[in-house]
Image (cartoon, rainbow, N blue to C red; front, side, top):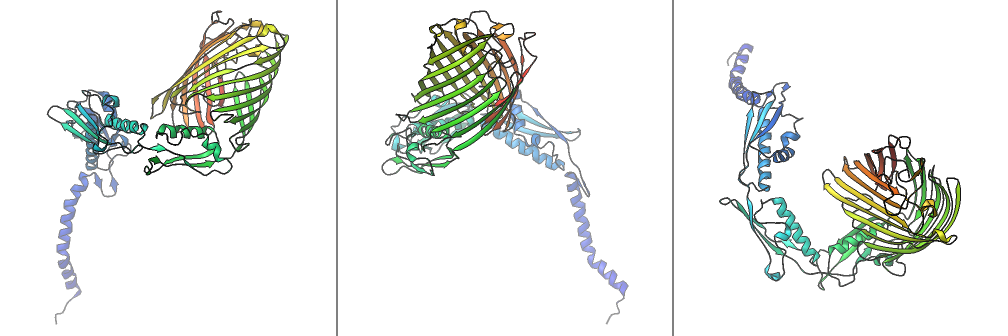
Length: 611
């Protein structure tokens, strides 16, 4: 047996491990350069700052779009840990840029990437050769053999115009329009079977083939209604805008959804179409409803620098007799108005397209122009003449005691309001598109004094135009006109004359202060002309800003020619979205300020948009 000492054991151990040590050293020697190339060192992370540039692009609009989809731009505040990761980030952007350019019709676009490490920060340059635009050569839209006789919309009707630069977005939009057109023609399940986009690199053109399966024609029947608790089903069925056997049209379902929403009776509304047309050619439709609480109590605070604070309390029952009847009462108070009112509205009065409203109001109005203590009662019938058109007529009585410039007058007015309205707006509280037009003429007979008979004509048109979706930007405009004829200025009750100025009129001027004056006291006019313009921009989902310009005046004469100056006010506003409408804060300045009459600015706090 060999005599082994401890020293020999140590030598034998190192000898055995030497190959492993050698391999480890080789591994470290090979791996460290890789780490260094990535900018990584032991115990320390090296972040790389960079900037990006585009060469070869003459269109700054395209550069703006490319920067908008760039990972390098989005992650600029999160620099990569090494040059290799920076190159990977740039390569991802290069592929995204090429995909975007091809979607815009530049199918031969080429992009190179240069990384200049000698600059601080490192410069990453994208060399863009956009190439020629590829034009739309032809579009073939044809129904499958089973429906070969069905006429399809032309390419021009779908906004696909041969000879223009081809864009994928336009093609997708055209396909959406095509399917929507077929649905409007009674086919709920159309589809594009095998769309083909053929790119010809020789003549730089694109051809599109779009075979279409229109699906079966469908009829609408009686829908199944679910979820009702306290509301009678017959009330809901009266609102259905189709008869069994009518051809399917999604616009009918949308109109039904809108009518259900306007009742204020439902917290949830879901209209579900069947997955297929049944054997009789009928498309099953299910209406799932969730009732909201039918009673509500409300309170609102307002403030305007010209009128001071105001408060309004209200109570409403929206289903008094289980058929959507509304009963409401309210009371409000401010420095200029104190009133109590009550109203009752019954839908489907004598006809399915008709409603009855009964209203009463007792008020003590004390603006600067006059003092009026009055009692008013009215009955009004409204009838729908079409999807967007409503007509109304009624009968009313008003008894008042009015004081103006120390003179006290008593009136008993019998009036007959006649109204016509047209509404194509998309939302009751915050419309983004469409318009609203209202015109009303009201003959008024003073049964206590034959000299005070007159006719009051009033009209207002509002228009909403979306300018951008993200962020949401809407242009809104309003124009108002009114005329009183048949009586002299002094014979028209002061609280029935026209006044301009204030938060709902010309912002920047005090309430009722624009128009005829006696000293600095408003006198009121027999004609009125106002206009307003707003740009409404969303900052977040809940907050928006508004820039506005208002103008107008009231005229002493009934023909807009008595010489009163047309005055303008302008300002900025803040909007905060709430479930009952936007909370509005406006600050406005008078652009035609009258010294001694107008303040340097006015501000207004209230609910809902100005118009």
